[in-house]
Length: 356
Image 1 (cartoon, rainbow, N blue to C red):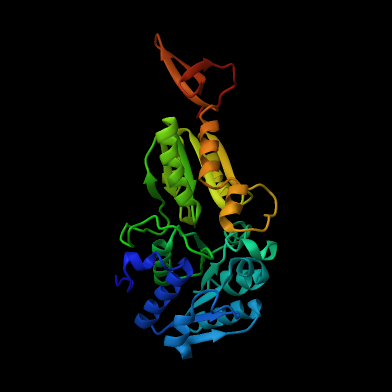
Image 2: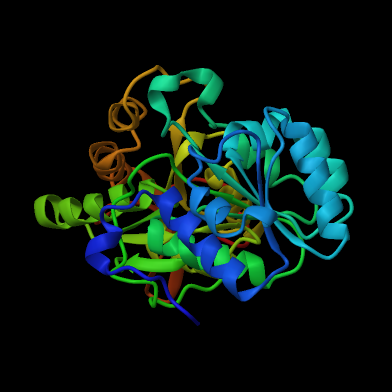
């Protein structure tokens, strides 16, 4: 398994991207096929350590993202394992054609690390806010998509990506993510969500920086409102963990998704597709940027403005507890389908489908 050469205390001083850089060096020591490429962003994406340790396996193509992706595809076809490091907004938009045709169409073994994702580079403005990247990349065939919640999960995601064949997109933040895990040994499994907090009243499904906010919200919901919120870290968007989503829909009947991304096409849409295709009924709400560009400012302020911070999640969960969900009430040998608002039952005149 290996392991990082720093302690838990040290990790709190490292940005997520720095942990990625150190993990890449670890992989480079074990496998000479690992190479690193960037488009003049070695410093910003924190792969300088790899450049120093393996200068003959590091390539800076300059400010030319399209060439970056094409070169990486060629290296992969030659048997190398290229790791591309650039901002998420450039990886998903500026080089879309090369990502689509050179990498995904050929199922090339390229690993794309998109940093500064979401609104984490808040003060740089809309040109550097990656709020549409997940919607774009998850639609590409052969491409797997991971959105780690902290540095430890990033290390696990990078190792998992290196071990599997084919293209992988990993989305990480610019700055310092709050640690939600004590160490790397929490049982990371590609394609499987992680239950962070159990509860049967409402489920909050999040990824990336929003997982910490969801955990904090669950504590407030229980202590201040008596609401028991289930929190799921759905770090893998594609392939998605259908089982953990459908279990939540059945057992809590209310789902809130939270993402630092537009509500169109990202985590919320992916989760909604699973619920809709199953035929199950539940109250459902997507939190994210509501079909708009973000303001410019510090990341924590933008999360508050967009309602994806702890307070926004708490407010949405409390409001959702007032919304109806479908239940079956049995009395005198008869079963009636009804709407249930919190702990009060009301019979409803509705044309119900056979499966609820």
